[in-house]
Image (tube, rainbow, N blue to C red; front, top):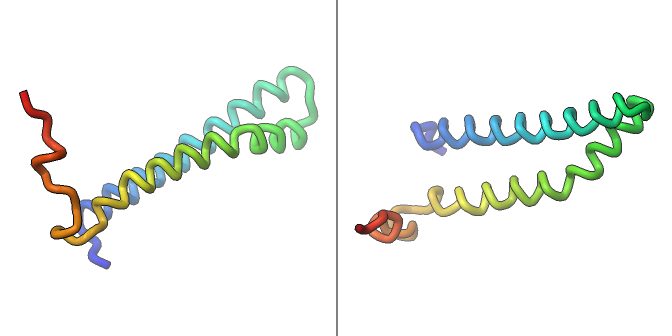
Length: 85
């Protein structure tokens, strides 16, 4: 696999997506911990409650990015991707 600009941008976006997901879980766990729940229980509940939305977001991102990994003759044409006035 080539390590071109598009690959590097994709990797940076995946790292950003993972960081965003981690921040959401930690923020939820912090709120629950401040309400008086034990730390481990708050963290596990945060991970359980945020798992489905995080997986849906990640899957939508991956499916949307898959078409850019195709060969040029299989990828959607640029004309269909542009906005026409």
